Image (tube, rainbow, N blue to C red; front, side):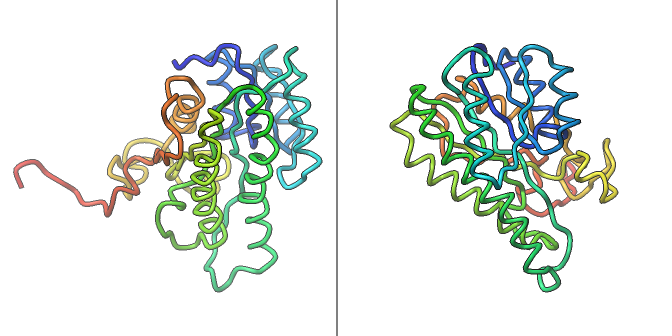
Amino acid sequence: MHDLSGKTILITGAARGIGAETARQAVAAGANVVIADVLDDDGKALAAELGAPAVYQHLDVTSELDWVTALAAACEAFGGTVVDGLVNNAGISTGELLANESVEHFRKVIDINLVGVFLGMRTFIPALKQAGGGSIVNVSSAAGLMGLALTGSYGASKWAVRGMSKVAAIENGTDRIRVNSVHPGMTYTPMTAQVGIRQGEGGYPNTPMGRVGEAGEIAAAIVFLLSDAAAYITGAELAVDGGWTAGPTVKYVMGQ
């Protein structure tokens, strides 16, 4: 378990899925966590589950005002005046051919998945500078490392998050603000369960490991990057995808 004792972390899209599991693991590692989402009932329930180290904050990541309010709430929630980390996890997906996607839907995905990350970093970077440094983890996707059919707007947003993370890492390194991106592969969450994927060995033969990821496995990578164990890691892109982006899946048998 990586130590986050005394750190205050805000996590977007934290009411369920990868965000919720990240909140659980961060609290277990000693952090105070602001659970930020638009799913108010789920978010409040998770905060109640986690107890005193967690609070819920309504946050529409496309709203500049909501971001300002969320930062103020994070700074005040646990008796301190600074924040130590930000996880930009909120996002929505797509599932149709690029040529069939509407302009309205494309813009909606970009607004949440990309502009939301931009607003989060723009809001939190000055606060992290004031704190003497910190960690930002932007959740991209395997779709931000390779081309995937049926992910037009989603893929575009996740490639952009990957690139924007590197820009922010370069610009803020001397201020001891680390910025990294995490790239989950197919992971079992409420968002992906609706497409029919199943958990367990053999459930996803497209990956070398032959299964989908679990939210806890992605969360563990995020918590690592938030912690001081990753003190010399910035501008990195960490694929947590069972080898999916390593290349075409070919069955290898020893001796053949």
